Image (cartoon, rainbow, N blue to C red; front, side, top):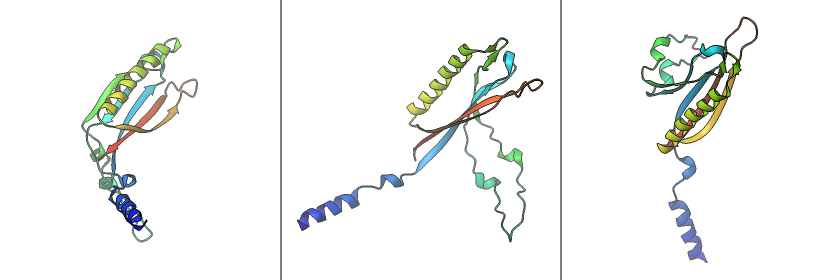
Length: 150
């Protein structure tokens, strides 16, 4: 019995801790315009370079009141992928063919990410819609958050 317990203990301790596995993450954003008549700009966007948030972050405490002096322009990435997609609305209202077309392009992007070893971990979305007469603006934004083992 003692030999079995020792064997089980050895097996358990020799199995790597899968829960502690480190991941890298990548965010793909789709912005779909709700501006009618094709006047909006709808895109799928993904960064092709890394930035560290630490380069643009300061820690403010009771003892340290220094403001963040980093330049916003320095935070911009120069290398990103931009895919044109269609607007939700046409001259006559909501355009279901445009939505189906966007779905096909987004599916292609998601499938390509998965083929490249990424796993879709989270999806989050939000909307700022046309608020009535005189507004004429609005977007539907979706963020696809992918992960893969480092």
